[in-house]
Length: 352
Image (cartoon, rainbow, N blue to C red; front, side):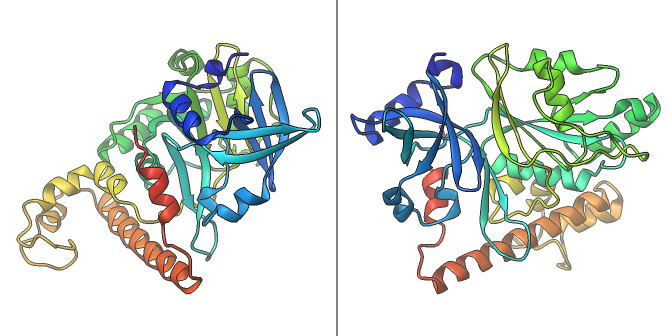
């Protein structure tokens, strides 16, 4: 396998020439599991560990290698020991707030061309959660594609109603409806995926992500479990890993997410709530919070019924959550004497 088949292009080669030492080689991280990494180059996959020097240079969890990263590695002991010495700048990434009360970033994957946001047509469907995923994608410069699964559990009219709910919220992202049982829509997903491109699949536990991956690979790459009587699947994926498909595309599988916390969202909020952003230009006050101010064009649209209540409420909630988490994150780093957000900016400034 050539490195170009793993997504290596001139942009990464140029950065590798700046960061990697002569005795080091380029490889891509294909799996992360409790401090251990699996890396892959043209000769195959091997386990690796971050070197002590590299670990001492990190300031935040986002500075650690994640699936999809390109890294500078050095092979020792006849290739039986591999050390990670540096991470190449990321073109794109997916990250969220860590689950629970701790305010920290969690890297999900890096250097992704498109993220498949998967929701079930049955128990899991939730437009507000979908908007969270879209904010996360926009913040990381990743193009989104929405995949609605388990269409065999709903009728055609109900499926059309679900899609209408998405469109009524101002979401114009492409949608592909699939059934892992009948195979409907799977060809559309396969045709979408291109050689040397990287795709990441995200969604709640049990929506059929692992089954979808098995359908795309053509064999049982990942373990799956039988759905419950309600149609709800059972969680199977326990780690993030990159899989190379036969047609040359790459797919990153991720564990189900119970929480999609937002920290410091800027462009992601503006781009995914552009209808509210456009309305705000007509507000009487430039710093209008769209809560109680007189002359608020957003509140007027809400009263007139031209702006959906659920869409507005989710915007208010996400904006407040993002600001609060960012403030807590910054305060915590200052207390610990660490540079606040330095690692974040070092990633984001490399937008291609």
